[in-house]
Length: 279
Image (cartoon, rainbow, N blue to C red; front, side):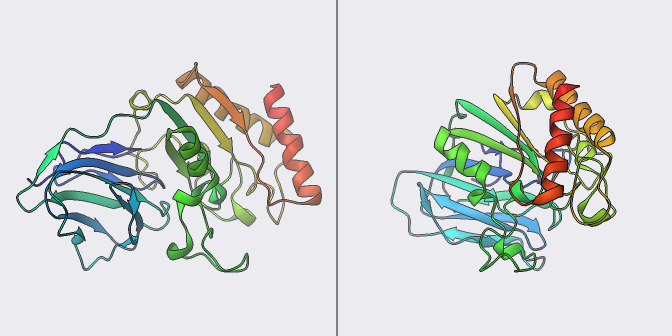
């Protein structure tokens, strides 16, 4: 049986294209159960990397190429039920991905695995996306091969809690100011989107109700250059918190401070967070 009819989509997927659902955020995942001796993924993407696990065993990552649309995952499997999980390791700046189907070579999809009892939403930047977690050192430039959301702090916490994690993270983006003043829309705008590079792609927040929302933003606002004044940063950050609270009134809301800033920049971010929380 081909297709994605009985596949569970985890995270933000745009399902408007009949060819298949599209995703861009880190941690976007598909989970499926099937009967069959082999399985392959049909996928359209440029250079995204995906973590792959079959029956709970991590396999080699899948590296997408614009020249391919079919990726064999396993063959010669034992008779019986198997469970597949494929998780987008890379963030939106790498590319969007479109899932076209699963090829089971005469097998059949089963009802998907049950939903996790706990749900975690992570709103952040490179720290949340897992930028460079596989790099040899801190000076290594950005690479899709060294980014892995599944080894980020949020994904590790979700696994420890048995929770489903949805990440909304883009490296370099801030609340009002991006890394070193670089251009680009800030995270409060991107937070509203299914596909963050597309302003028309609006997410229906009712589709995912988190138990906990962790906001880890501000590192880029206080990066090299002219940081925002505390009142401006605090007002924008507080507006984001109010938006999240209105969407998810029962969720525990956590404001986190990343570990990368030092000295005046670190103190400036902390002052801004304290002021935002007080508003």
